[in-house]
Every structure is written in structure tokens, then in C-alpha cells.
Length: 440
Image (cartoon, rainbow, N blue to C red; front, side):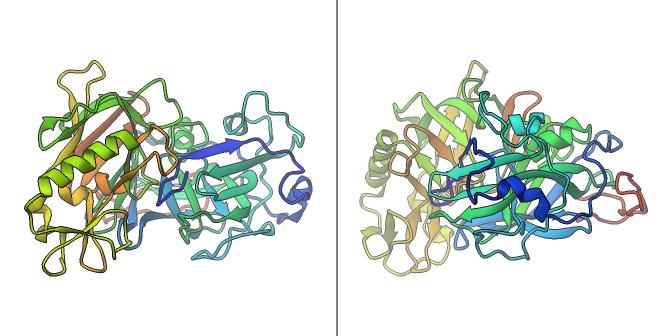
């Protein structure tokens, strides 16, 4: 779903005749050239990870993005990294029926289609989905803000540099989106990078080929940028605060039930179902908890040199001072930390700390605005969501093998580096390691 940056997705079955009426003949529109077979095996890399720089910010841009190099020959694309969905898709010239403005020319598809009976295709559809076009996998992704992508699944080459110094070029499945509708939280990017828990996610596919551990994480800098990683070689597990993933919500990364802590004290707001979502710019609390949180904030601000303003529409709730604020440092002394505390049977409780700089922004008008919104009004019903703003300057890790979510304060300004130079070989499925230099 995309509401003010939220991306929690729903994949629905589409028949071969859906959308344009012509997608049953879609493969005839594609180039006759094709790379290696989708069954090509990449030599496994032991104890290595992929680290990718992130660009963007929570405000004023409103989103983070990552560059991936895809295709043969390889071309750069800017994607929205989304832990709330599985499918990676690009706006695709197949030809494109409806596409939005993008930073690069639309992706040119090959003819290596994923068949409908493939397990990756099955993971995107209900169990009773009927294959009307067995030779291809049709998909449709609908977002809560009204945005959508309709397309076909195919295989192509992705180029990744490993922390071991190797370059890998595996053949992975992605969506060729030839019919897009922008939603209210439209981001002018080439597509979405699905990082969820399902088989179709990029990290799951890399893991199935023996290339990385089934672990994905990110480090978002409050100054903009940061890094994204696949695998478990870029952090010391003993320094991470861990809590188990909830097993009753398989589609999303959830730490289960949390309790709202304000200023170090319990608030009475408990049993909050909490989801971590890198596709959301801001954080959300359900209506009841949100109203209580606002009351606590306003009580704390009573007597402080701040007044609520109605002439700044950057976010629903903003305050002005005697003069315009320039940075969060000008105002954070007036606001308390809050946290979400998770027990889940582990001792001690895991507490996700959110300082003022991780829930406030300074608007272009010099106001301080609250980056925690009413999730019920946004269509999230009872879900409470930790978005990008509250994950800034933390390394957040989703370990699908240990079924745990972890976090730790971190300097997200400089990605980890390798000690090797990457050398591309003529065989796209081989790896070469060269001399000492940096991969990033």
C-alpha cells in the first residue's frame, strides 16, 4: 500500500486477457535475443554479502532508492526498496500501455518468460489460481493509494558486487510492468525492489541459488542516503537487539505485539501489532493509540515556546517557534523519546527506541512537524507501522533464517567496503576476484 510513502502490497490473479486484452500475445512483442537459460547455476559464494548504496531522504524528497544493474547488456535502474512486498518489477517497454515518468529509458524485455506453473509464479497468486496462459506468468500488484502494476514475469541477469570481492551475475525473476497507474504516493522511479519474505523476493532468489544467507537489512542515514544489504556478513550479531518475527502474519516483517513507551514510562497502550516497512516514509499508529500519543505530546509541550500552526500543510501536525527552525537540533530538547517494546517470550524485552530526530522533520517553512501519522485514517486499520523516519541512523535486519528482526544504532553514512577489485569474466555465470580496491 502506498499512502504518504507506505508500500504494503496485494497481488491478485489476472487472466491472460486482463489489462490490455493483448497480453496473451505478449511474448511476440519481445526481442528474439535471449541470454542464458533461467536454470543456469551460479557458483555459490561462501560467507559473503551484497551491499548497495541508498540515495534519497525522508524529507524533502520523501523516499529512498537504490540503483540496480539489470539486463544484458547491463543497464542501471532506480528502484524503491520495499520490505513490505515481494515482487521486483520495472516499467517495461513491451510496449508499455501506460507508464509513468521514469529516470531511465523503460526496461527492454527478453523472451525468457517464467511459466505459469513455476513456483515463483505460484507464490504470487492464490492457490486456486488457474493458468490461462501456461507459457507465461501474469501478475498484478495493487497498492492502497490507488497505484498498480500489471505485467508478466520473466528472467534476466542482475549484476551484484559481493563483500568477498566477487562479482556475481545471477539470472533472477522480475516483473515486466507494461501497465502502471500512479498512486497518491507516486515516486518517479523505474520500479520497485521487493524485499519481503516470499519466494519471489530478490533476497529469497539469491538465497535459493546459494549466494547469500536469507537476510536483508538497511541502514538509512538521517542526513540522506545509506545502504542496503543482502546476507549476514556486514554486522556483528552479538551487538544487535533481536526479537522474534511474528508467525501469525507471514506476509510482512512484524515483531508481533508491542507496547508504546513514552519518556521511558509505559502508556497503557499494549498489544499493538507492529510492522517494519522500508516502503513507508513515515510511521503510523492506529487511531486509538495515535490520539493517546498526541495527547502525551501536547501535555509535554505545554508551557514550551511552541504553538500549533494551521498554515503549514507539510504534515497533519506542525508547530512553530518564535522564529523559523533550521534543524532538528533547534527543537528536539522540547520533545521526549518514545519507544515500542516487544516481549514475545524473550528476556529482556527488546525496545525499539525512537528519539525526536526519528519522528520529527523541519519543514521548508521552518516549522517542526510530526512524522507519526494516524494509520487508521490512512487505511491501515489496526496496523502500527515503523517507517523510514523512525529507522534512520539504525541498522535494521530481517533474518529470515533465524526468523528474527534486529536493530542497532549505526553510522549509516558510509557503506561497508570490500578489499578486492571486481573483474568481469566473459562467462556471465562465473566469478573472478582481483586485486585490492574498494567495491563501493
